[in-house]
Image (cartoon, rainbow, N blue to C red):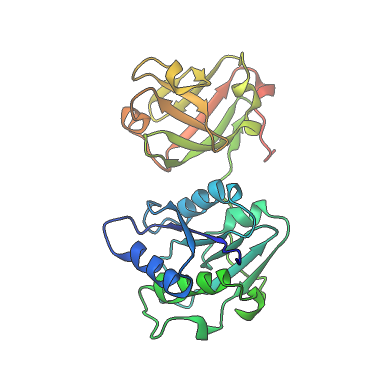
Length: 277
């Protein structure tokens, strides 16, 4: 029996409309035995960075040969290109709007193709639902074994962006930003362990994390270590500093959200380290 690769879906479509079900129907019409896995359909609407963060956190846990369809597409119907990306282990099908930027950062060897073989598309192609008419057929035929080269030529001018990086404000202060707020109200920052290593030691030097008009002076290794409603810092599973609260939404407690400034002040100036220095 031929191997049927897994197809994953990451979109900002939500679950209140027919969109997700329809693209699954298109895939199954072409590949009836397709294995379809939903990664997330709650990406912030139109938020390409949130889509990039979501797929970057999930894709590497899937088997080799997995095909990832990533649709956050505020430019649908415009001249933006559909692309097919081949890495050493995975395939990605997405609009060329930077939603795969963090994949480009993580994968050393990959090829990016502009999909121009429109005979694979559903006809007529809607100007507002390319996920159904363009992207779903691409992933389906790719799953059937169509060689990536048949979809279009390689390009090197694909769209990519850099996620915001923390920056030293002075010898004692590292300035970052909240990248997203998760389902539990945790504020996920762009500050990784290597950016402020002393903060994540078992016995960190005296520090304070300032967000909004609040100062946070506790770091824990588990959410349950905090008192109910207490706000603290923790190294989350995404590899970034999170501002969290035990059994409460830190975002609500602090009145903060995506884009909020986060400042870490450490008394030991040598402890403030960032790869941007």
